[in-house]
Amino acid sequence: MSSTTSFVQPDHRLTLIPGPIEFSNPVLAAMSTPSQAHTSPEFIATFQSVLKNLRKLFKSTNPKTQAYVLSGSGTLGWDIAASNLLTAGDDVLVLSTGFFSDSFADCLRIYGAEVDVVTAKVGDVVPLDQVKAKLSEKSYKAITITHVDTSTSVVSDVEAISKLVKQVSPETLIIVDGVCSIGVEDLEFDQWGIDFVLTASQKAIGVPAGLSILYASERALDIALNKKETTYFASLKRWTPVMQSYESGKGAYFATPAIQTITALRASLDEILSEPLDARFAKHEQVSTEFKNAVNKLGLQILPVSRDVAAHGLSAVYFPEGIDGNELLKKLAQKGFTVAGGIHKQLVGKYFRVGHMGYSVYAGHIPAFTKALEESLKELK
Image 1 (cartoon, rainbow, N blue to C red):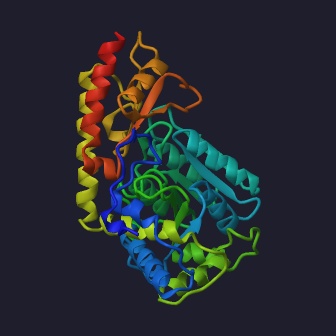
Image 2: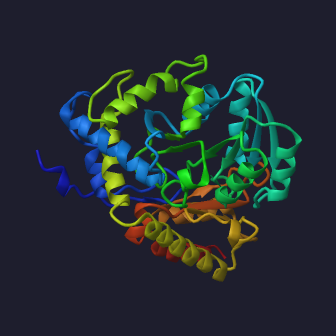
Image 3: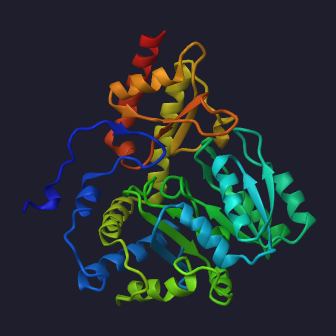
């Protein structure tokens, strides 16, 4: 059998949606790791490396915080947050910047939370004065912030919101949906005083779909480990000792981990951390700016109301007038690129979304796509 280190993926249509993204050769090679026992020395070493490196990715040095890697999608993180940190009847403030923020609110209601939603204007963030006003009205158990809502490509200022929460309502848990932000937007878990972050493998972290990745503060763990369980598989009471055991270099069992995908996560984290995180974020910002500038030169308009609230890992772009959006997407596919349509309920069929994060940023995929976009627009006029 040939060595996986020499694996080179075949030419294929590039997937430039906001996740799953394109994956590097070492990551895909790691997915072909032969079967291992979940308590084997090889896998214990792999999982230990992953959990330690996640601390670096989340910029946390507090030994009383904890990373988790579970089999599931990013959506599982909503259920984990709701079932482990909240009790039926708790008041929760949701800051909505799009479809996924609203879906998080729906999930919280399933678990009996009393949810108040503050909705931003389409393409914008919730103003801080509105957040302050809501926090002053009642005592919220938690606030949820969707760092980047993939439906609108709007990025919220987690640092500023967290600082405000600490000033106005310090007892409120700060929960961040980082599914489309971790690995591309800066997030400083300890310094900003965040309590819980949920993300997933298939976006900027650069690993095939299948892993729900979480990070919890000491305060969040104190709640989760001392409340009555309302879930089984998603219980942090059951997963915490497992994660602590693997991170300390010993195997443990509650449910079988996704061995090959976690092995791929190790490969991706090694790639991500091979340069300073701030350099990685700056690279994504550079490529994002170059793409948005090119879009503007083509006469197209991005969905966010300004660059200040536009994410760096994807761009949501309105279809130009006089051009059938579906035909444009077909043209781009014929030229070797898959991009995503818009899913915001008020703008379905009016815009498309391009992912520019992870491997594609370093592999030169975005300039090639920009050229294909320019050609496609000319051919459709």
